[in-house]
Image (cartoon, rainbow, N blue to C red; front, side, top):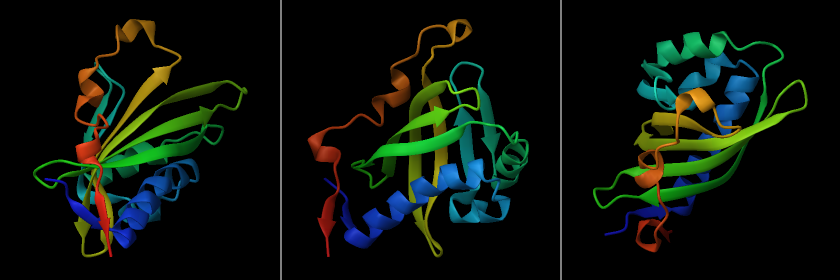
Length: 158
């Protein structure tokens, strides 16, 4: 069964996902609560990577961003629904580094409705290119739960 979402839900979810890069790149730490739930789980990379629990851990990580850090663009966001009602997003990102090189990857999220609006409860950033040789092969299981199928697209209702 496909989860029905309103056009307003779809717009708000897209806005929440777009805010990730703005909040991180601009170090808008006071705006983290516009993006994440208090109990957010955040993972960066695969293999060892970074694994954080809670918005305060995310705040600490985001506060360490270097002034000349990469500039992130979030693109091609898909909203997917699970039979149990879980709402996932799968976005691509492109990051421009200060030396002019680029990198890209996937943002995988689980979003939930809260009294304040849609927020990210789970967030994972997975690098695509350039590949990190020491990380080994990129596991496909990372994106299996976020794989696009027609029956997972939400039905938009008024």
